[in-house]
Length: 496
Image 1: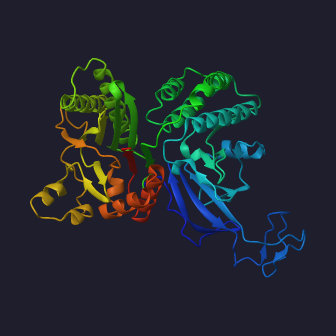
Image 2 (image 1 turned 90 degrees about the vertical axis):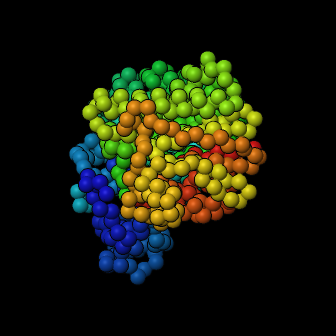
Image 3 (image 1 turned 180 degrees about the horizontal axis):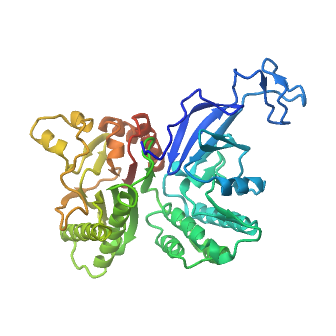
């Protein structure tokens, strides 16, 4: 566990005067989220959440002031720590009301943490939503959130870049901003250009939810994330000009992806990307970074971005077909490795990453490449088989019969790798050709998945949930149940 993050509250822990912890439901970077209830048998009276009375005896089922039923309530609590809470508390003191904001019922300080309490009605965090979302959904989200950000700016609220856990989703699918990081509360509206970093973060967040084949929307959000629309008005008008064309595009459910920080780590050092490239090629990549803050997360991001840009560039001049595509993927992998290595040298760090990638070619062909222990699996006709081979110490022991695969999975030295991206130049890359059939699904994943649950458990979930987005969420849920000790990231690619 990160030394900067406090220990989480155990189930049954009382919080303040009103609440009892049911359990920890999610960890994000700089946050822990809990479900709590108002069952406090240690208190003689109960609070009525309708009128605010605190005089009703615990044995009564009716509020003695307003006559409303005293039913048990549940709440979502966000806990933050490690800083000055003054700006956030000043934001709460404004008492803002907007349909795009999920404002807390109250806040309280417990053990050097600031807790904000929101009535719970089945909401979830955006961080549990798997990609892709439909174009229409993404554009409507963008419009709603830009409007809410503009409202905050008008009220003088400067917020820091938003992340997925700052979005909360109702059971009906409505999305609101939640538990924001506040930079300052001003006495006047925020100047439009000062919103640029927040708008760029919104574009980057939404970019990750775009379908692999929605190239035009991907490109639009990519340039928005680069700052081409620095004000809310600019970004909003750009979306309005494109919404009819983009929203009408519907794509088949051929891919799904998700990344999760887990239940122990504070930082998510994994990265993933997908894109459609020239000649009808689709590229999918997953990477698991190593090196801590500003290390592993940077290495994995560079790797997945570099391999995509290199393959795109080379395909524009590549004349090879079929087997020669192996050479292209290997070239891209090696160049991506060298970019990570050069950045590590420039920073003076030992950061590196694993990576597994797949090029899906026209004609039901695929090429898979890997370095490290991020894996590719093929699910076919109810069976799951591993395509790649781990570059790890325990895999060498499996190869000579010293360990079984299951023993290797839980071995204390399972994290010792003998080959990684970025730790040396010109890394050796393993390549695999796969002939795909209709109904096949390829799973690319980091060890935060397969290290927590067995291959048979993965197979069972993929067999049960044909919808890739649902399967991704269930695999994350299973990884949490297995301990959630590492970041877990995956892409599922289906063959129609």
